[in-house]
Amino acid sequence: MTNLLYINASPRGDLSAANQAALIFTDALADSVQVNRLDLFEAKLPEVTLEITAAKMKFAMGLDLDEEEARQWTAITNLVSQFVEADDYLFTIPMWNFNIPYKLKQYIDLITHPGLTFTSDENGPRGLASGRATLIYSRGGDYSPKDGKPDPFDFQSPYMNAWTRLVGLDPVSEVRVQKTMAGPDALNETLDAQKSQLTVLAKEMG
Image (cartoon, rainbow, N blue to C red; front, side, top):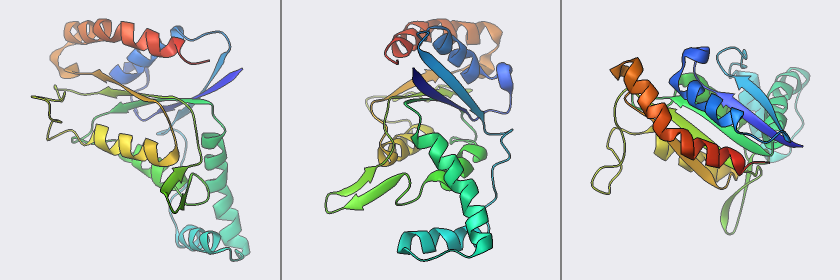
């Protein structure tokens, strides 16, 4: 059984264009793939507190945590365990102001720690998670690379590629669901255009 962690960064549920693309993906998965969905806008993620920042520093230096630090740090390590124990990953990520939604950034900040999701040695950083990742981006406009260069307003893709490499995910595949603000017909057209890629990526998992 393959454990696929589906991390949804949209508050729009099934109305989300990225989640509609994800449905094509999950429908094509083998029966041996178990999907565990994490809806970040419903998950009540912990807020970063003085105790959590103190615990992070003490953990990195091998120092003992006090009782309250340990209690709050457990919420972080539980999130980390859910993440690193997955076999493969699916992210649905709408573009907000050229970047990722704040809840996804919060989640990334909560789980990205030395000794938990990555480590470093003489060769540089090395991720402690592993597995394939499919990143589905939904965008109101067209932010594809142009003339062989990244779109200057696309901060989604560079950030997510850097972070997934840091924590060890490989390979990382991107699916762009674009021009979602052009109306239902345009959305259906772009979903149809991405169906083949989504299906192939789903078949590679499991």
